[in-house]
Image (cartoon, rainbow, N blue to C red; front, top):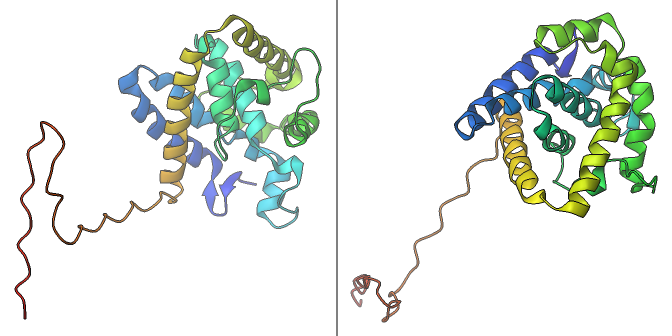
Length: 240
């Protein structure tokens, strides 16, 4: 069975398309490789049988097992280490994790090192992750990843996902106590914006541009800001 991103759209085709667009957005800023990785990994979680069943109407929407962002986000952070992009692992993880929502701080989204419970919605995503990773251990997923020119997912699915999660938590904790989060948020904002735009463009969901503001009626103010060139008043309407 062919893996789909949405009805009648092959998952591999979608991932390659988003990757190309995101890479193009970020290449001038020196983040092209990271943008490509974000695009390739952002919907990998859709390869689970749970998400595919939802597309077929066999599983209800909202079932936590169908949530797809977390597996792809962790996989991107793992690949970042192998692609010499380790300093971007946390921004990549967060950008992918939030590509259907709003950006949150890393301290809201990674498992805290001290074991404190995260808010319920995020806790549920981590709770179902083991079952999702187990379900992705299939020849179809391995073939998909190979077709994207990404590393063999076997080690990640078997053990490395949890090591990466711990590393992300340590990095978020370090930034919290030692500072240095400005650079992270700058890169995160760029990756998130590029991924969101690429995903929406490819899905044909790009928002329509806002309508132009109407031209004000009547006369312009008699005075202008200091140093500004006064605008001429429009001609008065001829009285009837």
